[in-house]
Image (cartoon, rainbow, N blue to C red; front, side):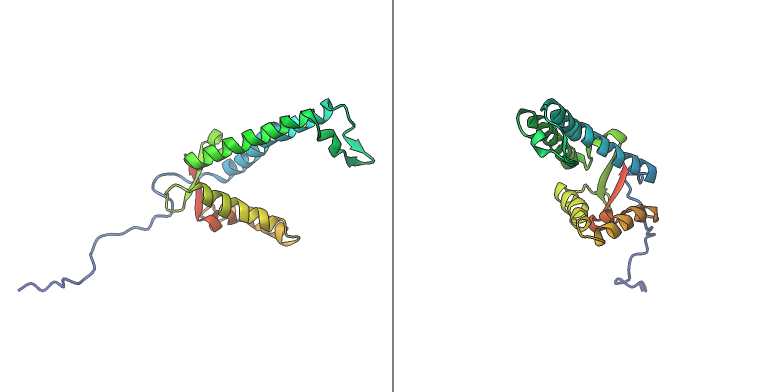
Length: 173
C-alpha cells in the first residue's frame, strides 16, 4: 500500500535570488558617472549651441543683470532646437530598444525590471523620471525627495527611490 500523500507540496530545493539571473548590478560609482556623462552630453547638444546662438545673434546676453531672451530669438534659435530634438530622439530610441540612455549606452549599463525582464519606455519615462521631476518642483518636498532618492542607492539592492517607484534595477549590459 502506498502511504505518500498525493496532495503534498513538491519537495524540490528552491533558492531565493537577490539579483537577476541575466546581469550583474551596476556599481554606484558607474551609475553616478553615467548621470554626469548624460548631463555633459545634454549640455554639449543643447546648451553649447544655445550659447553660440546668443553670441552669434550680436545682442548682449545680459541686460540689467538679467538674461536677454531676445538674444535667443531669430535664425540662430534653430541650433539649440535641433540639439534638443536630436537629444530626445537618441534617448527615446536607445531607451525603447534596450533601456539605455545615451550615457548608459556608452558606459555599458541598462535599466531592466527587478525580475530581469525588459523595462518599457513608458515605465522608464513615467514611473522612473516623470514622478521624480514633478516631485522635484514642489518646494521643500522636492529637495527632500532628491536627497532621499540619491541616498537610497547605498542600500543593499542599489535602488534609488525612482527605481523603487518603477520596480527597476540598473545592470551591466
